[in-house]
Image 1 (cartoon, rainbow, N blue to C red):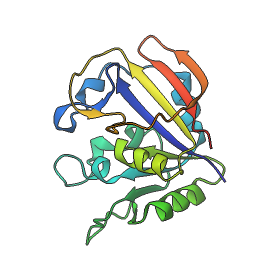
Image 2: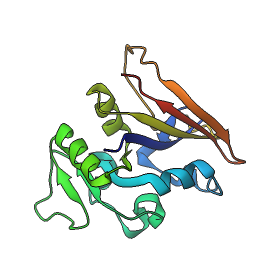
Image 3: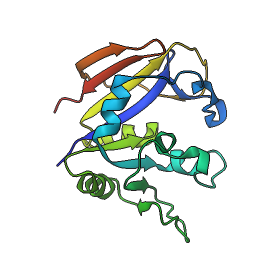
Image 4: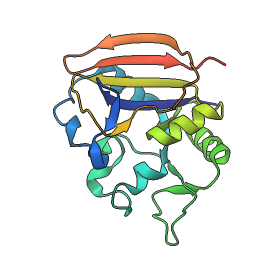
Length: 179
């Protein structure tokens, strides 16, 4: 069975979304990136967190908000305790974290079950369900918004570096979560 990968882009000062969940700051940081190409070729399923799926308006994704801008298609799951009464048939909604991860891994086969969202990744890390992290760090300072990881008091979780690569628009840091 595949691995659970948290794949995310963040600003140099550690934010993954700007104030009000604004993602427009990411414009202009795309371009050729072998790390992204590798991940896209290995994704078997995507597991999206509640806040990422429902967004700041609470209405769910729009056509423009497709995972990986539509460059990837496949099984998409949403972990939420608030399953919609009339769920979008393009998504599988699961209200238990362990079940959501197990379902995503089964759907992914030998590929990655990719986590989309900061809160779900933290929940998976806390539950011992996260295997790897791929962070694209872009050279911008947001100053406010949603932090990559926020745990007041901290616990000193150490990660093992797998690789660090660079493109003209970002630095890719690939890490393993030790068991």
